[in-house]
Image (cartoon, rainbow, N blue to C red; front, side, top):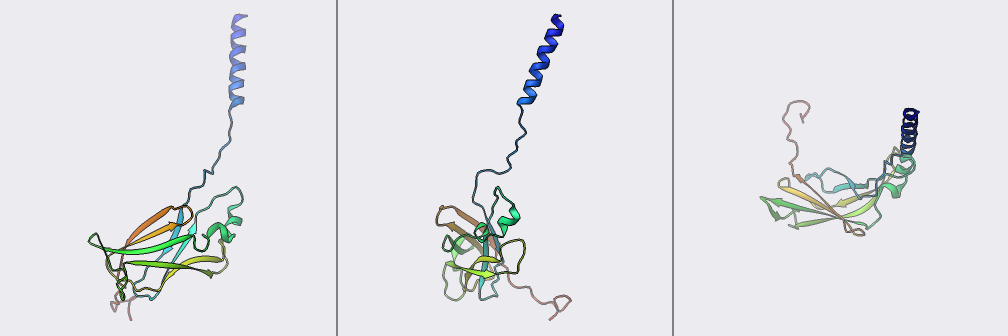
Length: 169
């Protein structure tokens, strides 16, 4: 009798413990600003263009959210986008013609072909000529949150034609 009571008590406790477990999984965390940057800086081109989008995750359908312009784009004037050039660790002229050390990009809206994301995209433009050597540092500052994001890349000269396919003139 005592043994049956112990088994019954342990069984009831076990059932209560397993019923108390929850299988709720929350895959969304509190929002953290992370920009997505698409850029190819080309010293040979008279204009540089950078696309900066917001990374987003919400409660709804991500495919629907991606089509919303304000889900993927920062607002006009929300970002300050600046480029600097360094050689041997020292800040030097970043622009070929005027010698400016800081190049600022202006924002503009463009229309892209329809696809998975909104066809209205905000891009950042600069009409300054770049050098083909040194290290360029991109700084993106959100003027509302004061968050700052940076990235660096080595400047590269254009591909030289070799006369051999596929680089033949």
